[in-house]
Image (cartoon, rainbow, N blue to C red):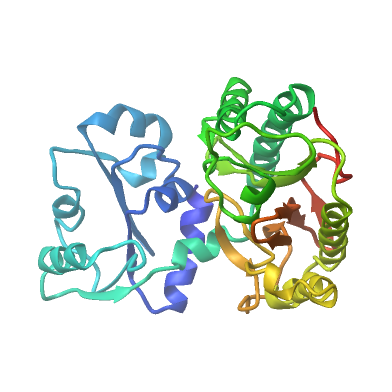
Length: 356
């Protein structure tokens, strides 16, 4: 954690900031190790302040290094954070602060401190994952994959409701050690699968169709994300053709994942395959996104993805084709960008599997 604070110091110097006020829970955890819901840190060259309230005082002593000087606060973190003064030019997380909070922050620091938008400082450093972070993401993915094998592949889904399958996935992940889900699982059969972010329904899953399952585990502070589309019996040839198309697009895009390309260039690889098959209007979302402590982070693999992909990024590759009122297909892997290519974390087969 000390090394991370030092990286923040270096970034602040680049931005000509003397310190940064960090209040976003995820950024605070990455920076200090604190896992509670109420805390604040002030970090910068020569500045280390960490504050929390009475509920988390003992927890903070066990999680946060002594260099941060954790203090018990009765109620007002902000007032104590600025107590004793702050450096002249201080950044704040403008992407996490409301207008009301910004007004109060200005009142608290007083006229002698210039407040400067500092959003993205910590998020930018979080993009390139450390080896330990990658191992935690791998562990979350293993838990999710094992739950899928149990609930979907071994347990069967025909006749069960979408909602039942989604709940069983969550329970199976928690039994294996997950702290929770990284997002509410998606289980969508037949025409419902044509909604990319469908909400599971109390509707039985029929035989002879495609079912989109999108799920992930949150474990030890890190997320996983995976999608598989399975068959529940003999399919209409049209449905099988769509599946084969999405799989081809996914494999070609995976092959393009390596350090160097912009996110939009990798997105274009999958999009070209789908467009050439006449389904341009049926692939309306980006190819993928970063995953880490948040399940949706930068960089983006999309039409607007202007960031270059570098070693240490962890991204999804998830093309989809959605035919309104008919079926949907999405295939998603979680991928670590390595020095000379990539490593697929997801362990589940992408062959079209038929489940009972």
